[in-house]
Length: 65
Image (cartoon, rainbow, N blue to C red; front, side, top):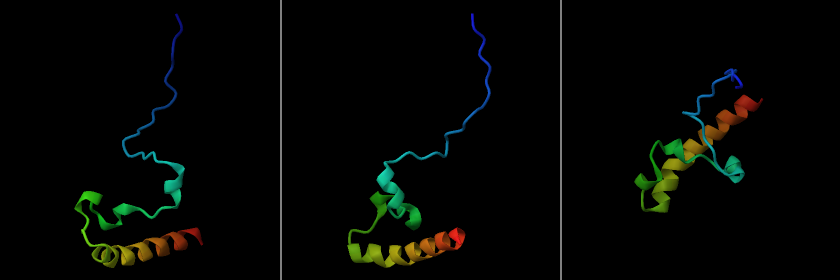
């Protein structure tokens, strides 16, 4: 009988798997709400989401430099 030895443990609790196309999509969680809680009006959504998206992209640019 073979003996197995554990060499590592991976905690997948906070992992996220998605299609590769999601790499280039802005995150929905910038609003800190699930999609089911978003406004019905697209203009209201964009009014709240756009400033947060700009801040998020600015932070990404800062980290890349």
